[in-house]
Length: 161
Length: 126
Image (cartoon, rainbow over all chains, first blue to last red; front, side):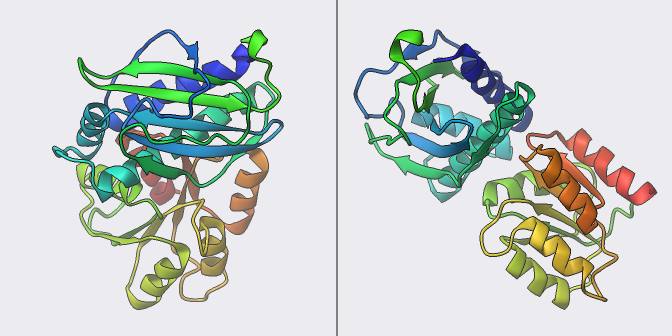
């Protein structure tokens, strides 16, 4: 997978969480997801991408991570995953996708983002828009709060990652 | 400077974004805020209430922000209400389309309360 496609999603994730949720996520080492479709987190926002290449983005939060992020974002303590938190996961995914598209456009790649879908539950299935390799970028927001950004583009050769 | 008591309508299909904008507006001293979740419900409110300023998302189901703006500019009673467009779009052609339709300013997500304040001040000092 072209590194030009990865960095915009990493930067966009940090930018969105810093700006809208006053949270400084720590970035871990990206790695390829094994062939499983199971999520790493408890709630996930998925956004399809069309344009120069087809693909999708998924942002999968542990319960601890999303409750911390949404509490910071709203300025109120959120204690459980509810309709407001689900809506926030959709909007966070939407904003990360939009900001990444802006950065990709600066590199000459044009994409449109679809309306995000939100899935929740332990080890739920994440369906990406294409069968290519899935790159996982891990983030931490606290000792127990982790989340993962998954990026998948069609026609990307697994060996090129 | 903008009137802190003006009636502001925020339009977004995501309750999260409406809540974030409402919190930012309150932080900036604006407390007279109404909300709508798409262009259709925004138009209904605009026809019922005396709204001074609209902050609208671009991408929404039913009637998007651009269609709402075009409808407002074609309506004798709504055409002078200032509109700030909130968008994830940075495509030049989209921004040009909004400018052509009569948008007063736009802000790209994600943004801070300070950026929102600067955009509002720019609109009301023009």
